[in-house]
Image (cartoon, rainbow, N blue to C red; front, top):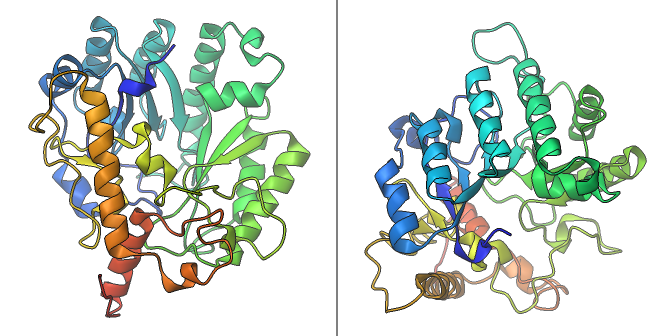
Length: 369
């Protein structure tokens, strides 16, 4: 069993060559191309006590020592799962499959967006390479989890735990797109009809656009209808306020955030994210000037008391989130909503910080309490 109480989410590098239109990491950050060193990762295990990592970037497989990192995890008997675009070489795929087989890599969540677009200098779409790697990894995951027994009659739950696909609804829903979101997902499932079980749907958070965005809400309704018809499942990657759908019946993907300060993901233990420089953040989006640069400037320099460091990290993580969220305050639109503080606490801090950055770019004055 994975000890998620001692899990860290690591941005092990900045670089990514896929070039997704919705990427929330600015090009200038990718250009810096910071990387976590292997000695730093070993310190997170030996000194901080991490036993499981969520690995992301950037594109983690573009880290210059990613194969060596997997070897070190195996040597120290820690596990990981990762987010990846799955556009890596056959050699990298071979190595990842090796660590799937040994039980070091427990799950992979592949980015499956924009695979119908031409990639780089090749006159081909991304699909060909992505599909090759995905089918090989699917087979390895299937064998490692004892095949159909692991499904227990439910392929969707198996995929949720081991190999859920990640798709982001772009903020600009029509720009340079030959297919709308639902048409795209229907096209993709037909490319891998026997291996398409579960989609993790995210929303493009390049600037907040969630409140009362019925266009996105209608897309979620349409994805739900397609999922029911085609027999796959989907769940949401981040918060979805009630007001994203037209007034009426609540949807399964609406957040129940009663009693929470904003985003459940950011205030839970899984939200402890570490950047390449060792700083701890709530999420990448929350680092704007209205949010906070970090929760802890460096995870190794925090003033830990004796004993388990994890409860101390979580306590500081939640304390800083609540403090900053209360300083910003919920938007007036949220405060006037009948759902507010009943079953929704409004936008999370990351979305509020992004809204501030958008307003600043548009020269709209924002008052901070």
